[in-house]
Length: 253
Ligand code: APR
Image 1 (cartoon, rainbow, N blue to C red):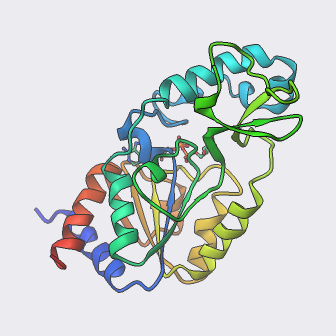
Image 2: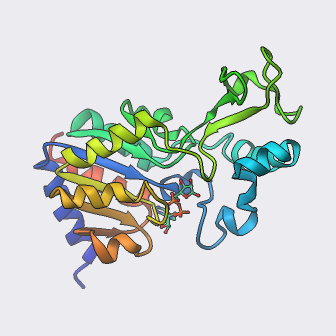
Image 3: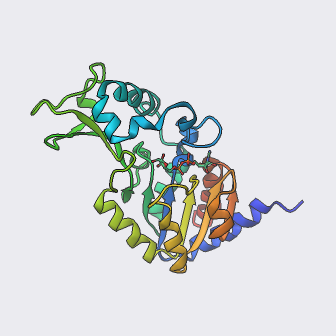
């Protein structure tokens, strides 16, 4: 029986080997094999927790309650997650192929931990805290999360994780750099995202409009699969990216 995944892996390998400018766009799915649940779908975080904890008004009106849930989701869960084979494969692709940048919706810092250098964090990063009053920044290791809500040691202001809450604007640098990638990429890797959240979900569409070949990796079909995807690699990111690396780098070694 001809294996569709094998055929599509070969197509994806050719596209990557011939690419001048590859961009990767990642969502929560790439970190599922690191033990971090995705947001939607079966067992998704938003099926267990109320998204209100990430609404700015609720956060400022109920800082202790909000922080208790934020600590559980983003510091107890994410805290000891390690980069997985998919993160490492992208770091290798940046070194050995023409992967120029990763645009990630994830706030778990795992692309950096896998060694990737150019990462645009479209939704920010949970390893940094920000004072909501004086904007002083802290590394999460500097903050005692046993005392909630955490306060700024300079001005006493409420500290907030440096990732965007619902309704907050996208970090300007990340926004600018990400849409610039969508203009440049000739191969665009879409890994582990439902593509339901704007404005992030417009970036792959922009890349497609600019002629990029869209390679999607996901165990499920998504709105992208039915719309813009040229090569669909159905499967888990860790497994598929490992197979892709073998095909790509066995040619070089
Ligand atoms: N490998 C690859 N993809 C996977 C895996 C896996 N092992 N497991 C699940 N997936 C896929 C799911 O099929 C789904 O398409 O990952 C996707 C996860 O989708 P979401 O949970 O919606 O995550 P994401 O698309 O990143 O959400 C976007 O929503 O809540 C906001 O800010 C949050 O950045 C997040 C944004």
